[in-house]
Image (tube, rainbow, N blue to C red; front, side, top):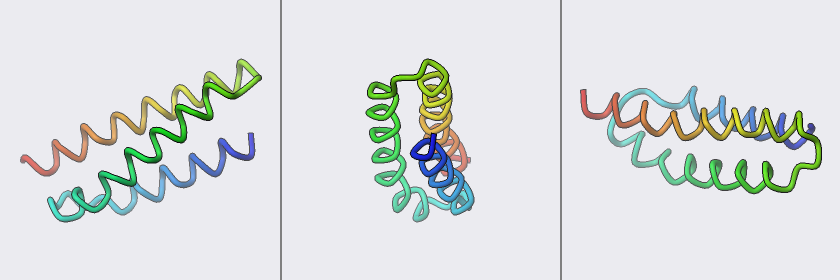
Length: 75
């Protein structure tokens, strides 16, 4: 659960840095992709079903974050 908390805190830090500018998106996109990969790896390695569930929810939020980045950049 400790690792999940750290990944979640990292996710919220990335979300807080998003200001809707293309430059910010370009800087944060590799970080978001890296975070998504680490969350996916953590989800696969987790032994508890509860941790796997919450890691899956976090992975979905991280991938949705990319869609929000694109939405802010285009509009």
